[in-house]
Image 1 (spheres, rainbow, N blue to C red):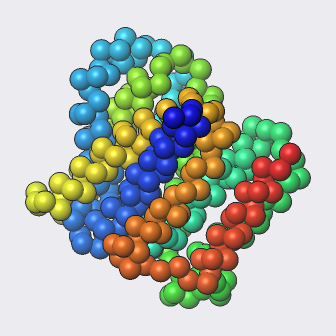
Image 2 (tube, helix red, strand yellow; image 1 turned 90 degrees about the vertical axis):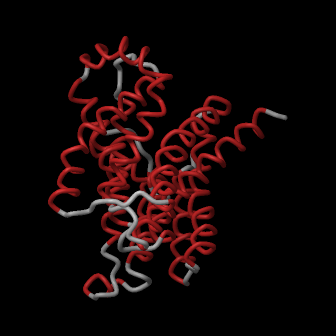
Amino acid sequence: MSTSLKAAIFLCFASLFWSGNFVIGRFSSLENIVSPLSLAFYRWVIAFLILTPFCLQKAVKELPLLKKQPGMIFLIILTGPTLFNTLVYLGLTATTVINSLLIISTTPMLIILLNKLLYKAQTNIFQMIGIFISLIGVCYVITKGSFQNIFDSEFYFGDLFILLAVISWALYSIFLKKNETGVSGFSFLYLSFVFTVILLFPVYLYDIFIQDNFISIDQKTLLVIGYTGIFPSIISYMCWNTGVALIGPNKSGPFLHLMPIFGGILAFLVFRETLEIYHYAGILSVIIGIIITNKK
């Protein structure tokens, strides 16, 4: 088996499990299984517990390295695992899986835009045109094909949370490149889980004792928490990192755009969600934006 084919398999599985996270989040919301805030907390608790036997010893040794950039490390953990996933689960209570994944697919272009605004990163006219076209497409999807819906009850309020999640993940990606602590990949991932659990714990207590969102342990609850804590939290990262190591980040990036496809199939099978005309227009706009953005 060639290196490219191996990488493609790993990257496809990463995108598939990440897409499944949106389906499970939506399923949990519709069935009132686990509240969004509690799910965001339980997810990282499960991932933390699973990785502890394998990562604890090395992570403890490398923990002092985080003192080199405490502010940047805080921003990385806040914008990545803490805010991104919490905003996604909140958004999925009021929008569809297909909508959310189409919005998420613009993340690479938003990274370019925010990187230019924050750090004056070099861009070209093609990248800016591509970003503009893609964002127009996403706005078209969010407003269900009519910009008048912004002022109407038909407007999906949940899409705003997904959009905030995209901004959060784009910032996380930018800040992650500024990490110069020297902590190894899996140790950093594990420590991120640790601090995310700490940051989300007060939110979890609020959700349980103020919002009265207690959970009942049954088969559905275990399925939801187990999937989110294992597949998108651990296995997807392992598959993604392996694929990137094999063929590099530039060739790996486009595989993220499989998420709307995988998610669309899963959403149809589970919820009978279908693609509307405005979805097709949004997909076309995003694809055109990607092509233009990557033009040299």
